[in-house]
Amino acid sequence: MAPAGPPGAALRSSVAYDTTHSREPGPAVDLLAKANDHRRKKQYRRALNAYLEVIELHPGSRQAEAARVAAAALRLEHLSDANGAAEHYRAAASGQGQLGEEAAYGLAEAHRAAGRHDAERQQLHRFLDQYPTSPLAATARLRLRELERHEK
Image 1 (spheres, rainbow, N blue to C red):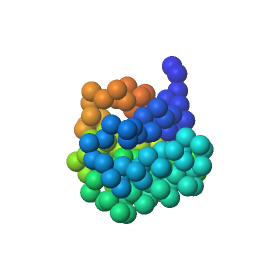
Image 2: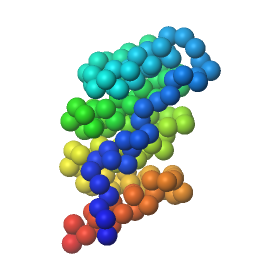
Image 3: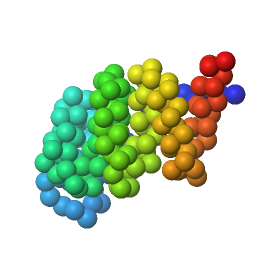
């Protein structure tokens, strides 16, 4: 059976957000585009700062939701900051936004990276309860089986 992969692996393809077709022109879109540009250039600290600026200046916007998830993924995958990633994922998962599914799974990945396997297991169960038909559900189930094997 193939392993579920390293933390963040399942989310890597989905955390760069397209800002070119947004219906919300203005500063939030511009800041998010700037953050994504820094990220593409592998300027991760600059990207993180720009994502945080979107969150701070436009807290209720769709761009802030995207920035939370992108900042979390950036912290987890490139800045070795699982705790910071967990904070952002937790905030995004608690909202009613479109990225709640990704944030809920990302929170489990952040717990995994931090070595909090009990919290990871609990979050994976919550994820599966909330999103049983998610494309990430099979990966979540596989990871739960791996955790169960390691308990024995």
